Image 1 (tube, rainbow, N blue to C red):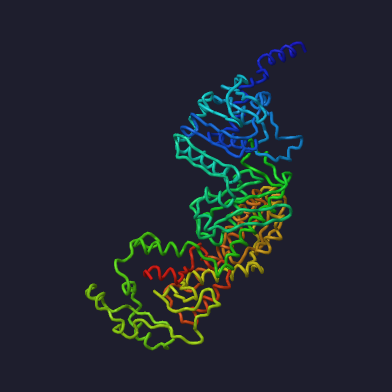
Image 2 (image 1 turned 90 degrees about the vertical axis):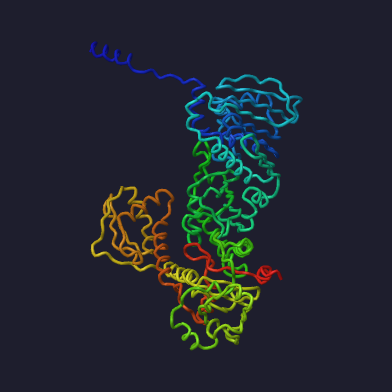
Length: 632
């Protein structure tokens, strides 16, 4: 027994001792979470300035924020005692006993001590009632002051030599330009959230940005550009205590990435995957693949309904009812897109006509390709077949006829001596005016007048003319019909032998929870023991599919978002493909009645301004625009 005691004592002496880390080490560890890069410092300091009631905030940087970050504000300032506490960890004036009742941007009390532990930090501040200002400095975690200083009011925070105390972190920073761009992005997000504050950003590493205090709409024009506000839909919706406001771009105005999507939760800029996914779902049917809308949306709700204390950087949030927030976002965006059809006709690009006019003026097409050096008949070069002229002459006079132009001789002679009366019979025939095809002013898309290149319908409206891509337009009509059928129930195809798929028990539970929803979409499943599901039927629209991969994808999506969109998204993709193959093809000559019927269907179909791939289905030119082209 004594030997055993001696052995235990000997083992105890070799075990490492538990020690208390020095305060400077603790702060540097915390700084690794709070301060990821210079942009993180700018975010934290600007948030503090906003919480201090500032109406003007000036930011100055150098070398992408690595050598200098200076934030000045005209807020209420701090006295010497508050300055001393401000650089100590977990000291804050913004948080009470309720960790869920957070009504300020900052609340953790970690930002300033974290910055001071890895840089040279100085804070100079003066309250409105103080006779003088006070300054405190923190160098590598060591505090000096406070001491008297000179400042008229507010607070100035200066951070230099960021990460000098942790040089290994410097190696992970990107180039000065990349860090400068990251700071600019943070600055713009804060400026969007608080339009009543004047923001300025300057330094030797950038051009100066100045945003005067203004309205929310004007601030969006300042930050996102007037082109965005000219192509933006107003969003204003609410549900069960949650309000959603802001602006989102029309489907025809988009970017190649989602960096221009700004979300704010109770005024706090966030980058939330669930919100990004909701936007993708809302625009799914009206955007080209790989394109993203531009938007700035503000969600306001009771602080107890959202947890902003997920991560020290406070960029992530967690909603108590994520489905409610997602549903509000998707529903309001879809409703705004559909409402565009009430603004004078089906959905269209507000910039389309101006883009076309500018292309004409510059001598280029809207795809930046050189336009022909001459106009007129030279555009009709497609061979329509050897029997077309005979067919054209045999048609009734009220039917559309288009044929190849006569062979060109000398272009100068043709232009000088052109005589419209000498065009051969059957070359161009108009749709004759009659009561049945007279221009209907009540129709937004007017009445068909011609078909060009066997694909483009030219329609006359009261205001001007419309050019329609017949294939793209009909593709959307067929697609919406298929979606309507899906909403009423999807046919299932029974499997001869149920497919058993092994999955983790938690995934099985998630899938079974959504079994009723799956059944409406044509997918029938049931539990098969604790760790498997049996698939008895799959949607007929899907045809042959990888059932195992489908179930795993569904389980993963439900685990991440709490929804079951993967199957519906696949069904929509299949429906879009079917619509493409079942639509009026390019190259098919249409009768006038067929063209007008297509126009009327477009006017009644949701999202008819874009095909399933997000391309425009028509472009409208007003008469005044056409006259301007001819200098009238």
